[in-house]
Image (cartoon, rainbow, N blue to C red):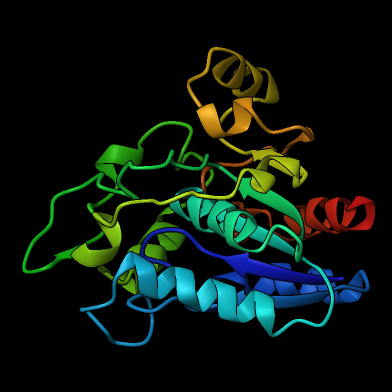
Length: 228
């Protein structure tokens, strides 16, 4: 099955290299997406531009597709289900949850000169970055692409209730499936509270398992696709 891979803030498509190789070996067709403003040199990109790029990638696939979102891009994956519920076979969310309608996409860190740069490692100390050694931290920070303000502060618009029929798998890296279930049951993640088909997968990693556990993450995604 075709599997669309969407990285979170500051990441371009190349971050999925190890995962993509693993998926190919397992018989799937990965498509790693480089988002507008996160690899194409456009600091004027907006959230609408990124949504359009995701939808174009979905539309380019013959048949149905599994859409994988990492971190903030969990919202992009969910927007794909909202815009193309008949084409998205499954949404996989890695280390994050979709924003609700009317909320900001990813207004998390300081914006400078029209972009939200990588804020350094202090906000991620603890479980998020525990499995990244110093070399991996330097490489990730050096490759981080500042996110245009038009993306980070873009407003999420969800319109099609059929999105709740699309199966969802929550991959839990720096948090546990039990924690994720609790947040959803407590209505802290209202979009997933209404999801009709919800499953969980645990992975022993920090926030960037595509870097630290690519083979294991590929197996999890392949299993999700096989059952989609």
